[in-house]
Amino acid sequence: MTERRTDIALDLSDSESQALYDDHAKRLLGYRWILAAFLKEVLPGVAGYTVAQIVEMIDPDIQISTTRLHPDLRVRGLNTEYKDVPDEHDNGKKKKRSRQIRFDILFRIRLPEGARRFLINIEIQKEKPEKYVLADRATAYGAQGITSQMNVEYLKGNYSDMMPVYSIWIVAGQKKNTVSTWKLTERTDGTPGEWGEADKLRLMILGFNERSGYQEGEKPTWNLLRSLFSTTMKVEEKLEILERYDVPVIEDVEEEVLDMCNLGRGVYENGQKSGILLGEDKLTYRMGRLKEAMIKAGRQQEFLDAVGNMKAMDRLFAEFGI
Image (cartoon, rainbow, N blue to C red):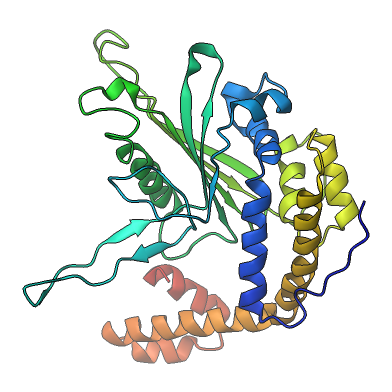
């Protein structure tokens, strides 16, 4: 292994370190051999193939943080955030601004049997969102992957040429490792399959505890993800795990892992230092919302009486859904 040290994270703010860490994580997961190892563990259709065989199925045009997805253009990927389109004006009047989805990683895979193709979107989240339901967002991303194919992958009317879409979400910061999947299923009092198979959209969310240790009998998926996203694992440990999954550790991969480990130490240490403060900030925010809600409900005195009594506060948080 190349001897190389870097102080890439020393002069960066917390947010800059996290952003760079996320960028390295996307590029590392987007490496074709690592994608193949990951898909072998999570995609039933390729589980019977070797990693080397799956690499050949993956279209080399893997989109990672490159181009915005337009509804009427070829599918391309960028990051996980919604992007506002600049204001437009028509005869001096401001037109309504639209929002367009950007992706972390987007690529195609072609299975040998019948040359069937899939469009796969992978999103990486550092935590479970609080402002929206993640399965709803995953549905929106998957639906966008389907609608964007018209007049690109298939012509209007030839709907059977549409590629199935998999939207896979890796959500770190969870207490335990879990896999949740969604797909359309048919219920009919007629002839099964009479109207076709509604198999064009599937969702998967992997809840991941990146600080968990290896456990006997666990799914191989989790150890592979640890090698990519752990903020505490050593470089040598990560590279050793990747090699176990038949991933050739070329220089580019080694450099990404080295940079991620350096950045990861900064992210982890900063998280340790600020964890208590973050918890306090969150409680203050919730109490502010509760106070506002109870004043509106005419129960200000009840709120004041509950302050300092966490059992009473928990009961009120639950009552007001905060």
